[in-house]
Image (cartoon, rainbow, N blue to C red; front, side, top):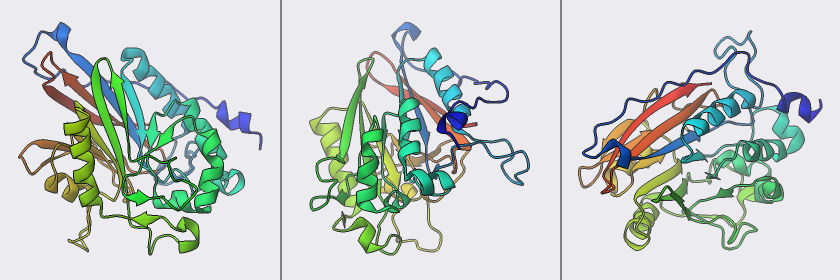
Length: 304
C-alpha cells in the first residue's frame, strides 16, 4: 500500500462547524481575545476512516476528515492550539509496519503543537519512540516521567509555554504509572513520579513564576476509576489542585459531549475533557479573555 494513497484521501462530504455561543464577558466585544484549543486522545494509529460496514463507528474518523475540520477552524480563528493526550501508537497495521513514522508525519502535516505520552507510546520501547521523533515537527511534554537515565533525557520536557495574541498559555503533561501496563524492558529506567505532587509543582511554576494566563494539563491518567477510589484520575486531579483551567485527558477512552466542570481547591472551575478514541471525535474548547484577562469558555465535541 502506497502512503500517498491514504494520505490524500479526502472526506466524503463537507464538515459543518457550529460556533459556540458567545459567552457573556464584562468587556467591549472588540477587546475580547479568543483562544481555541483543539485536542485528540487515544487515536491508536487509526489513519483511515471506519468503513461503512463497521457496526459501531461506520464512516467516522480518518485523518483526512480531521485535517479538513482543523483547517476550517483555523480559517475562522488563527489563535489555535492543537494538542494530543497520548496513545498515538498501536491499534492498526500502520503502526506494526511503520513503527509510528506515519502517525508522526501526519500529525506534523496537521500542525499539532504539542502532545504527551501514553502507555502505548512505549510499545516499541523507549528506543523505538525516540527513533521516530525526527518525523515529529512538534514536541512532547511529561512532567511526572523522569527520563534522566534514558534516551529521552532533556528531549521530553515537563511543560511548554505558548503565546497567542498576547495570552500566555502553559501546558504540562502527566502520564499513568507504567508498571503493570508496560513491560519494564520497554520503558527501561523511566521513573514514575506522583502526578498529584508534580501537578502542584507545575501549576506553581506556570502560574506564579511564569505568569501564565491559561494553564492546561495534558493528562494520560484516565477520566475516573470506580473500582479504585484511591487511584488518581483527571476528575480527582482537578478537585485536589488549583490554577489548572483545563485538563485534556486520555487513557480511559471516555466519550464526552462537552467538558465536565469540576470545582478545584479554591472553588474555581476546571474543565475536564476527553473525546473517546480512534480519532472519531475532535475536542474544541474556546476561551475568551477580556481586557483584564478575565476568562470565559465554551466547549463541545465535534464528530469527525
